[in-house]
Amino acid sequence: MADIRSKAVLTELAPLYQEANYGVDLAATSLREPLGMGDSIGVPSIGALTVNASGATDANPEAVTNAELTLNANLEPWINAKLPQIESMALGGQWASQTAAQCVSQLKNSMDSDFLKYLIARNWTAGTASTYHVNPGAESLTSDMVYQAIATLTNNKGVTEQDCVFMVSAWGRGSLSSIAGFVPNMTDAGGRVNGLPAVGTLMGIPVYQTSAVPNARTIASTAWTDDGSSAMTITVGADHGVVKGQKITFDTVTGANDITSAAEVTSTAATTITVASVAGGSATEAGTITVEASENLLINKNQTFVAQQIMPKTRIVDLYNSTGSALQVSAVWGRIARAGHAIVLGSPKSAI
Image 1 (cartoon, helix red, strand yellow):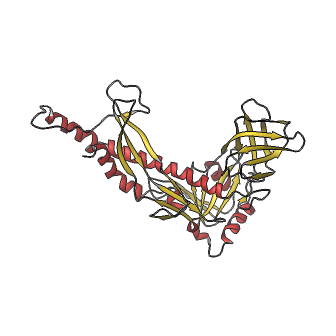
Image 2 (image 1 turned 120 degrees about the vertical axis):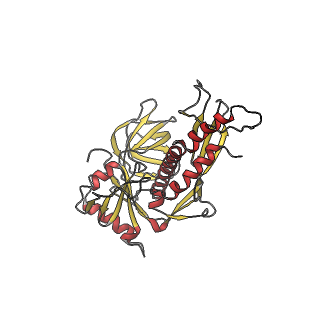
Image 3 (image 1 turned 45 degrees about the vertical axis):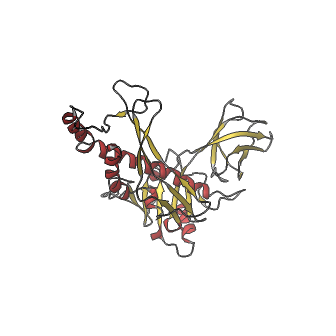
């Protein structure tokens, strides 16, 4: 028999998940099946809701306090006391609904973060091109920049403003709010409790604010080489999403060749980023690149696809280092975007 926690949460989870209003729901065409060979499939999960015996301290994070008991009425004299307790904690109480709401929020936010970073990575172009970026240097936004982003996207045949949606960070919203064509939403913050706030429209296109939009995104580096005169080349992993014209800072383990004042990227390749020379020499050690921008997205939702289950799965898994067990909630999903159907609109990462 399934654990009572799993059953109770699953009952609450179904309507919450189907009515969610997150980036993967708003900015993509949802499909019910995996998309095809080579497409990315992810499994976000919630696996840290644990149940411990009294006084246990080795679980992280906090414990929930109910579990199912399987009792034989002929052998267990305390059954009359135990059953009302279980009913109160799992079914008649608030535990299941609160757990389900938190799981949906965490799952969808995790999916949104991966989804939007995936679109940014797909917008990468090699060399000195920044084809799918507007204002990569994150200067103060102007109406011309916004119109350029809209024109670039709607120049695709069959694409209209009605097919588009803006996904912006909190700082991106501040920047867009200064544009004359921005109309703030003063009445409805999104229409649904479980999802992203609709903060307004820009040139007739809906604008949603989400923390999943990268603001000062970081990229891990493994090495660099500096010729001491013209160029420093930093080694990174694939799908870094950095393009020519963006400004970065660079922090290394030893402090050698750090970039503390934002430097403009002069060119990129699949696994390298090039900026002007800082000092000289080379090193094979860890470093961190920070993109000095908020990377807002204008998305054609009709050419951006998400494949996901109709609702997540729940299960109970034993923990080796705990006296209890963990409730795990997961959702299998994939995503794919057609080239040229999302535009990165750079804006300042902090001061507007």
